[in-house]
Structures are given as structure tokens and as C-alpha cells.
Image (tube, rainbow, N blue to C red; front, side):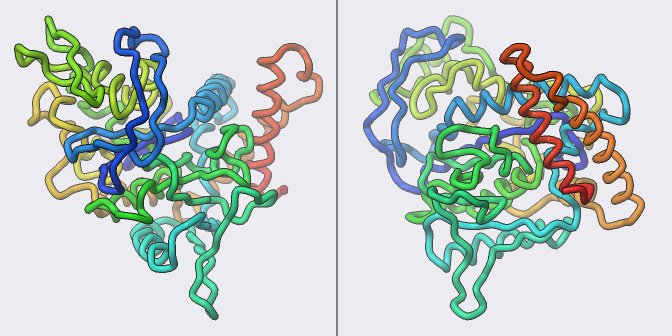
Length: 399
């Protein structure tokens, strides 16, 4: 969901960090000569990163296994879209929570004051959407719900941590999908699903906007810069200036060369502090065409629009540059998207339930035991189908 748009992509969303949560460590050495269209061999730095400056563009360091499992699952989901039977919006229908649902939130780390501030910041979301974010406040003690990395049952659907690199969230109900992720980040009860790195030590100046951005991801929203109706794909500097000589500062950040020629996005993000390869950049930044998407207009005021450094843009005045003062409170497009994804009217709720039933029929057919054991790809498809069927049974009251 981007503003008033239902998208056909789900998974993990990754954010720009501010560097305000601390400085970084001197760990990561990049092999500068590695081609960036292949996996660059690096020692990934730990968090917080030492030597960050306020003008650094910091993207989080999510494990590749999370991204890989999302990509594989989404490919399978998209294959169902061509099957008819009202499955055009199956990705959205699977990733959204059930309208009217109480979605539990729990914290790992942080104090009561921080927990309260985060809960208060999300009220802009629940004032519009037909969902309840339940932070589990104990009326006797004022303490908020917590979770741990030893949990075997879900303490909450959204499990917040503060100790991992950057800001990120799983998208929608992926937060409870055990097939997503294999380490400390994923959809199992003992895995983080949303991270606000560094908030326990120092919050960025725009921390309320960061919280709303991440919780909108947790509601099923994607980034505005990947809106296929927007100008960002065409307006961003993907490649180096002609004749650019790769030049790095002592930290390993790619900078302008001796003649003032600048690195493009692919080169810049391959160095400190991100160390991203081309596949990761494409997955997180480039726009995909989704012919079955119901897309709203691109909106510069959206809290879901990335705020990049000037070197990312061909023209600093192009339409992809966020509006001044935006990104803190929900825009009208963000609110419109929430009303579309989590409606209140009986007619809209009935339409969502009918689509969920169609999707459940497809999932149950795909999870048939007759499909098991043929080859690894089909085994994984059966796992995805069973998980999707379980999710959808809950949505239509057949759990």
C-alpha cells in the first residue's frame, strides 16, 4: 500500500538511518575492487557505526536470508495472480491484517517512557484505520508488553527491538510468518519484526516520523519512492558521472573524484556505511511494474517517502524530492491508504472477506498433499501455501 495504492509486493522494508543514535564502529573493510553487480565481499560492521556524519546515507543491514525468503515467497504468490478466481490482489489480501483486529505490540529493551512515546506516536494510524494497536499496558504498573528471544509462543504480532542496525519492519502479517527469516529477524515468536535502532540511547530529530513510517510498514505499506506512478525511478542517479574514478574517503565511503565527478547510487551504496550489492539496491530502491495494482497518485508529503542525499537525484528540484516539512505526520494520501486497507463500512468489509475466501480456496488447493515431495521448489511452495491458508482461515473465521 502506497498512499491510496494496493501493491502486489510484500516483505521487508528498509530505512534510512539518521546516525543520531550513536557513532559507529571501525569494523567493516570493503574489498573496493569487487564488481558491485556481484555480491561484494565485506566484513559487515556492527551497530552503532563509528565515524558517521550527519550527511551519510545509512541503510540498514538486514540479513540476506530475510530478503531471500521474502523474494522467493513473493514470486510464488505472484504466480497465483494469473489463476483467475478473483486473485488479482492476493499479495495485499495475504499481507494485510484483518480489519477490526487487535494487533498486539511488544518491546525488547527500552524503558516505559520510550514505550509510551512510541505508542502515542502511532495514534495517528489507529485514528484512521479500522485496527487497534494494543501495547499491553498494565494498568497497575504502567508497564508495556514485552517479548524475548526465547519465546516459543507469540507475545505479540509486532515485536519491536532497538539493538539492531537501522530502522526496518517486516510488512504486514509477515511479522507472524515463520517462513520469513532464519536468524534474529523474522516472523517467529522469538524474532524481531520491527527495529528502531539506537532509540534507547538517542532518538533522531524526526523520531515520530520514523515510528509512523515503520508502523505503516507493519500495517502493510511499502515505500513511496517505489510507487510506479511516481517520478523516482527516472529521476534518480543510478550510475556514476561519465568518467568517474572510484574514490573513497578513509572510512570507505565513495565520494566525488579529483575532477568533481560523483558516484552514482550503485557505487555509493556499495561502500561505507551500507556495503550493498546491486541486487539488494534494486530490490529496495527500484520500481517494479504491477499491472494489477490499484495505484494512488505519488505524494511528496507521504511519511513513506525516502529522504535521500542530493547526490541520489539527477535534479535536486525533481518531483521525487520530499516536500519540505514532510515525513513527520501522515499525509492525506497515507490516511486514504489506511482507509482503503482497513475500511469501516460493511460493504468494503464484505468485499475484503470475499477476496480472502477466494484466496483461501487457492491456498488450500496449492497445499494439497499430492503436491509434496516432487522437488525442492514444490516443497517450498507447499509450505508457503499452508502458511497462507492458516493466515486466511483466521481472516475468514475458520481457524
